[in-house]
Image 1 (cartoon, rainbow, N blue to C red):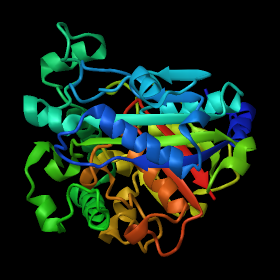
Image 2 (image 1 turned 180 degrees about the vertical axis):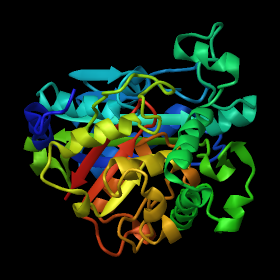
Image 3 (image 1 turned 120 degrees about the vertical axis):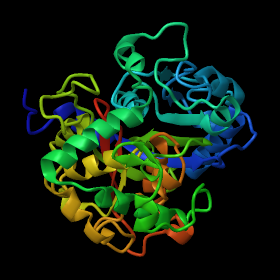
Length: 403
């Protein structure tokens, strides 16, 4: 099924919604602070950034809800915890796992505001995977937290498909095979993100790396090495989306131009499409561009999901910054994605060096850059349009934000 050129209802939703504020707690490998403490830090900062008060918040959204079946720190905070702590009077609330990647919570919030259900929605994503991993020596291993393995994981875990790194590596291998992509292309993403992290006081890894460091790093799942993988942290990130008719109440709004969350392939990591290099990123990107008059050349900065470097490479191609199979040329020497390049990428260090804030950190960085509040990492060419993308495999959503 092909996507129509214009989607009238999502276009109306974009016109009705603004990103009014964002906040982020401390980020660290092991902060020894409770998940709710981190969440409240981020939430209160986001509300203040929007120029609002907790009493203004009438919607609440989060991903993934409370989830302990992946790792103890993957979904440690419930909506009720935040509602009760802040004394929120809600007209709408939602948290869940299924949807267009982590940003499904943001899609839901935008649609709730656009439909008139609520006026200001607080959205949060909290992780304490740094602490839980170091205490229990257990990474995020899908489907292994309960008594029985269920769902799609029953076909993966028994065959040692314990982690998403194995799934991303399969895509990488196929891309290498079909298009001649090399590890050096992925290395440019890791090196770029580390350089950007050096300017981010919250980033967990800031020491510079060179290509020789990347190529000699420990292999995790061929061809992905340790430096291709994001780093578990303790952190919370919060965003406020508001009704466009509340602009008079908002300090410095960022406008939603369009968003894409289409899923045309199978909802499966290993059987998404007969094209073994395709992901939901391609469907979501096509959906997003169908709703706007903007083009890739209008984008001033890209904050793209890099849970693994291969996912960022996939988003570069899916969003049309280069043709399919051409990322190796686009990434050659790293100049295009540098801070002063054609498309500054993951200007806070991404998840590879900044820490695995699990999708929401990209929104925080895009909004902060668009508001001109990024401090020492603020781009010299102040951006007016940013693209944010979440997810990999069958999970994907992307957003165009502008000022």
